[in-house]
Length: 324
Length: 250
Image (cartoon, rainbow over all chains, first blue to last red; front, side, top):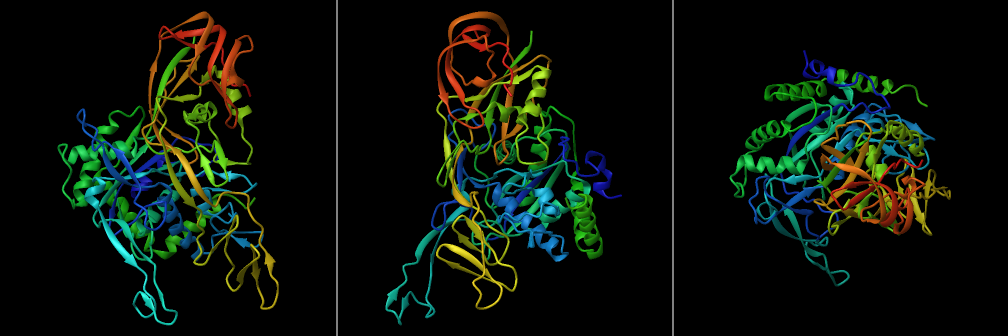
């Protein structure tokens, strides 16, 4: 019996427009596999940082540390597009007024799996709230430990900074701050009132998304490692608390070794979660390590079976009812 | 007598409400409105799909019947902000950032910009179909309330209730941690007391005599602070007053 079937009692069987407070929290370790850049202000600007305490058990007078932040919208932006590529392949992105469903151009079809799950806001045509909720993810290590500088310059066709035809010199030379490979980000993705198939689809998008942040045609390779899954009837703790607790579990107040093997971080996420859940004023079920691994295998098997995947996507699309 | 809970909200992420929009800057005022809090605490539920107009009358009116009220939240100490840039991106390989418009083109067609407008051209030589602009933000700067701000509000309820430990606030559903504790109080007739924290003037009982106050203009209703008033109040913490019989004025 599949893991999702085993726990389907914690999920609604079909989509309902009224929130029912059924939460699935996916606990992630996002591992940077190449250089990566997360910033909002454009080329040459520094990475996004927040000054926060290293751990929860910080001693009085200990200064906060800077952590690098992957902002919440830079996570869903990538993952929903991964899913939309798949929907496009099976012609499941609907059209509206002869324009096919396209992000951010005011032409949501309002009926495909992506519109229904990740939400949209249309000018004047109502809106659909997202049921995939992301939080800013914090680096486990302090920014100083995991960042470096790179200089870049733009060459002419002659492969030099000098254009012989016009006599111009290239002015494009600058420095980018980047995140070093093997940096780890601790993250929770919260799914609200998703059906079993919507859960499979979201997990598929997570496992299949591989490039985040700036210049993602060259850098920004990230592996999403599922460290835990919790079904609950209320919101869990925040990313900040989880990251700080993981820091406490792994170290004794000192900065951690870098690089740190992701399996250590995974273990620490599970241990931190167990501790933090004791404080939760609600009912919850956390999957065991073995079940989490089985779940991943289940999703891998589904996505490698084209006919099963296609029929699931078609069924999901049809389940939202006829086009209004 | 009702139950009164003091709730401290600690922002765990940058939090954005569009309180003020000046050209391409979208600013969060240092406060959290009480309509937003009623939904965030889960006292009432907004449906996943909406037709576009708010449902304050149905949703908040229902809370009045249950004798449940929440005040706006006042930031403790000096508010801290962070600023970030945003831009909307489509999911096509080719796109153009037009003026108030993100341009994409159907396969096989061509898009051309002329005189600030964009045209979709299906056949060579034709003028093409002009694309309309959209009155919604495609890029700009957001001023968020920064992580770590703490805001205080009061929940007044006829029934004993459980306040959630974590809630989500604002356009980006930013997480906040809630520390709620019941407070002891007595019902008194207050004469000329000043209430320093934020209140929603639409929710105050008509019999409360209001002398003067500061108005903060934010949607969906303006809020007031430093209200000097006389009338029936709950006295908490010796010198803190909360007007009695507040209810959502929807």
